[in-house]
Length: 303
Image (tube, rainbow, N blue to C red; front, side, top):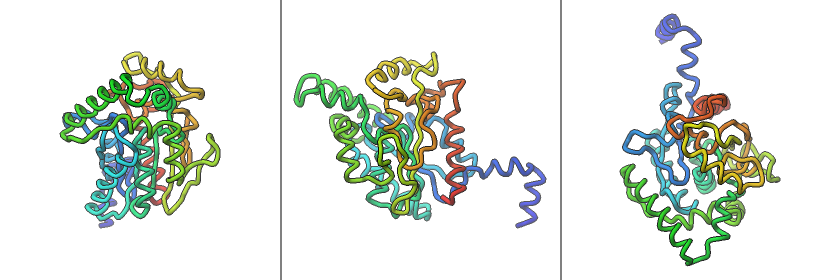
């Protein structure tokens, strides 16, 4: 065995050998998408654009999950929990490292709260732990049962159903429940039930560990980061609703949970997971590099 290792070192060199295991965490990494997200579309388009393959090239065991595109955090969390139970049992790992983007960051908090025995760490990326102003605006201005609310519900639920079918699944959608979950009011209720990792103050850091689970978070404050990305203009308009610097969807301080890796990356909400098609800030950090560094961080603390 030692001879084989020595032969590999001689062939590829110490530095290259280290790179082959830089992301080899003790527990599998599970990627969890946000609202209107998906595991893979047409089996080709990846929500976490190229992140899984990048981490696998560094030795990590990586799984992507799929939950309803539009629904309450609890409903999405229950769908995620079933997959986490399966991954933990199938791999024999017992636990997993959960990484959730946007609404997915709330889903992973739910799973960690109800089954902490299955979770080694929770990492949230651009997740609205104190609520998202866009969701609060919609919650406050769309009257229950009104025409505008009905139209929004129909369009969003239809979009969710189409995305679900394009990814080979068919799941019920509830966009009104999703909006309420992400509003400031909805998050106050959620946080009262599942407070692990939350900071005492809005812009502070939360406990790094609770109930045997490590907590991390990061986010960006870039908005228009690429002239080639058609979604940047929409994010720029949405950002005007926010009173603090934000990534176009989630406020900087609202994204804080546990150990804050960084809250001002030069990335917008979609750049954070290398969307769309890699049209990101060419002068900012590469999202895949940020994920690589985090996998190495998890590895170094024994996760």
